[in-house]
Amino acid sequence: MTLTAEEWTAMLLSLKVAAVAVAFSLPAGLGMAWLLSRKQFWGKSLLNGLVHLPLILPPVVTGYLLLITFGRKGSVGAFLEQAFGLVFSFRWTGAALAAAVMGFPLLVRSIRLSLDAVDRRLEAAAATLGAPPSYVFFTVTLPLILPGIAAGAILAFAKSMGEFGATITFVSNIPGETQTLASAIYTYTQVPGGDVAAMRLTLISIVLSLGALVVSEFLSRRIAARVGAA
Image (cartoon, rainbow, N blue to C red):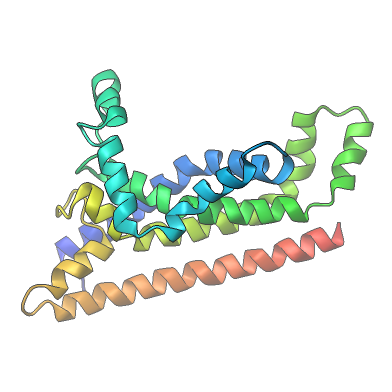
């Protein structure tokens, strides 16, 4: 299967966008999962709903909200551009932001389920030996939830690779700048003779997505085995 230079660019950009989206959302996802799993506070259900809202809202709505918030005329976007020179709208950075937002619920959910499955007695035993909370987390909790973190990151990566609606609404479909695999496939379906190229990119997307799901399932099984043996 031979790809054109434009198709290679779209595929590499998709990989770049997905990797950056996961890398920057992972710390926030870990913190949010820990907060929802271990803390009780007023508004927890509301916060949980907000975290999972991108899974329920039409992606176009999410993209529009990102545009009016992080666009050059948006309150946050204007501040970031003036203060740091950081621009999201119609840039690949905006595609990464949209992908991170859409994949964030999957990341948080996977990590939270791993945290919920950890035997709290192991953490309590470490604490009774005088270990501070941070030491307990990094030496006891984190090793136990690493498979869940990896599974969540892979699911978020796969979601980012296939993201279309929010991305095209927020950053448009600019070849070489914001045109990912999904938007490239859409473009090829709209031009005469583009069916072959669209099918090539579709097959690549299927292979990448299936690979991510297989790896995620493997890691999920490891979670159950690891926690059960602890």
